[in-house]
Length: 639
Image 1 (tube, rainbow, N blue to C red):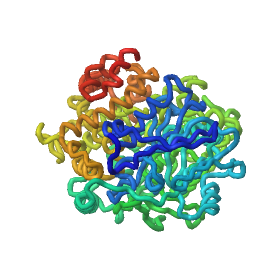
Image 2: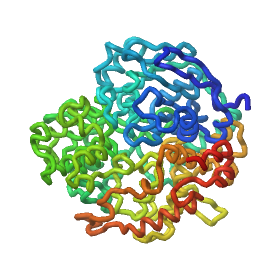
Image 3: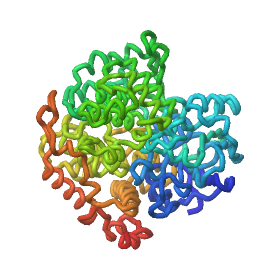
């Protein structure tokens, strides 16, 4: 391949050690096989860093990857991926953010940006089309994310797009995030710490070009059809609501609470009695000042909330999203929405993932309650359940690694291993990544989804709770097999057939996060995504059901190969939180429920068989050859 529409055909490589910036051709064969975002980023990362690379060393790389729909009029395609080796988990990490950075990078002429090495002093990268500079950031070091973005926009203009880290990233907090447009985040897994380890404070970009597609007329019609039928009308969407008229993702809090799946008091319970009135969607709407949409998206699913009175008056944030309400709210037994808004804003400005932060604080609260951590251990802070002031104090300590904050900055896996005393039993993480806001015992296949997600405890690779509880067969249905995107009968606590659901949902997510399309767009179907990619690139064969399946499978196997190369095996998939198999949920609709290990083991074995991975979770050579991954098939025998 020499060129293809939908892509710019160039990668920008910035070496912070040598202060060099060079253009390189995009590997279009990789692009055809892995599309963009998650898939292409995984293939690039596998090639770029050697086995065993320390995530916080100069040898690790931060790779920002767009997709063939980025920068076009395709709806809900404003996201882009930041791919690296995670400092929190030591395995593959992709992290997505909305907003305009991905489009601006494409307009500047690049499909991807690779940042490598380490700057001698704090620095930032400025990209204006083909002009790239590595600038001094001494005056920005120590500033929070909002202050940094303000300073760069004052220098270069309000219309630039900025990625930046806060004090947490500078201090190598293992779940530090990279912030974008003040309120958008590459949150999970610690990409901010990778930036900090490179003395990279920010990346700013402004592009003036455009993205050409292979079939302009057909692309416009497909984009209109997708916008109207699948996003505005949403006849077959799992989220069959009008986001503009509702509270956005906080709507999920009422449902998860109702079915006993809302993490409460460090996942001891799946029900929070004060969620509805004080923390739920109706409470959110009372503080909402306006909605906001990403580029080329009609849904406007995010909210701006502002606190007008009380001790947190003046706090305003885009959010909180459902995950934040759950992990900083119910999981810490905090029912004060203004306090959650203030905590959300503080995490954004310090540059910390709210999911990992909420889990870490809840774990420390349970340690304090059980006498494992004393007031003296916590620097004089009485870290009681629901104490928002104590939580704010701890967030500041973590961001600066002060006192107990130095330990908590390591995440619950490392912190619990250091503290011991049984605290490992309630460290709610998988492979080092703290769990998101879905109680794993509330749906029998959620532990399998967490166990097999390529970046650790993550719900954005498979979300089978939608099948288990709602009965919605949310995956890329194959009509040839009689599958339909309509509610089906399924037994919530029966493990039969659940491995297949996780397996197929992962294919859908793999394609969606590689093309790249928002998580809330087109939940049950992939055909419109494939059609848009085909019209953008000219790859007509990607519309074929079998080729679509092969592409999705190839992406899933690519991320697994990276993790296997880094030492991940079946034992790591089986290392789920002790609480899942040994403690029942304490109260609420799912009181008394716990998952049987034998059921999980059975599902995991079925999943491996479906994937054609061996008994250790390693992709088989013949499977890789079948998927057109011959270049990697020979290596698998040496892993």
